[in-house]
Image (cartoon, helix red, strand yellow):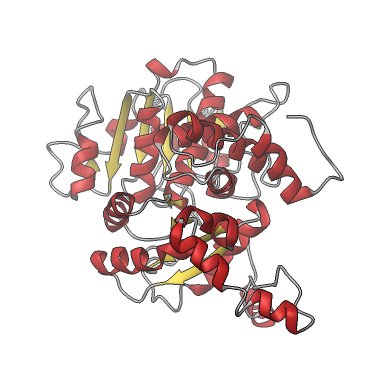
Length: 415
């Protein structure tokens, strides 16, 4: 999909921000003013001081998240200033509101020092029900995620990386069903060992796929690769059980699935032909995929998914992160676990009607109204099951409430 630059600039100039703040109560006279501000705020402040958990009932914290970036890995732009990251950051906040009815506040931090990001986020955390880390470059993003999880008693979620991991996991689950393959024997190549590539690989391993080969820009992760950061070194120890050596051409031979999270036009048709029969291809690099869908199909790919809106099987983190965060907030979860992400992936996969499931329909449509409620329900119930939820809500409660939040009572559907 091509977007006209001038139209994009005009839309942003006209809107002057993609999100806004609107009152939830009316103030029409002195009494209502006193209740809403001072002295009315004194009573809830004292109540929260005595019992911090009441902040979820007496303030908007329970539906408010911070979307935090340092501008170091903005999609399509790379490393830019905190100020220049605002359009993308506001766009992400808009998506949280439209697809999850979540109040997402963009926070652009003017530092690319890991400790600065951790400390600044920790300081603002009391105002939010969860933290979404957005477009922070690897390996910094993993250090920030790990440390904030240790310091904060609230969910910290890398929305693009972990969101895409959920989508890829769901898509591969359905693609394996379509191609009648068993995940235990499936050979997967992940091309790209940045933040998203590592997150995808981690979740696939948790999902039970064991034969995964991961590549960075210099080749297969392993002892012979001299250019790996500490996160890639950790991933090398968990992958490549057959000890494959070399680059993409060697890794791809005999593989059943290719997941591209690197750069455009690096996978050739001749490489695809060396894969196992009827392979699964997810070339997800943007704006240009590792191989075009047309070339992939001509080379024999049975299932193809890309990040491009004008083809079948659109794989975007947008399909996952609003629902994950909705479920997390609704049960006041204290963290986002791997189990919760796997529950989200299975819910996303199951949103595709089994009667529609095919090589051209392995994920639901981007604007499917079932996606957020189903994922939110699955994440919430898994959080309860694992002991990460402050609120213990009955089955279907989060689904029903999410549906009502997003679509009202006009078009209720059975779960």
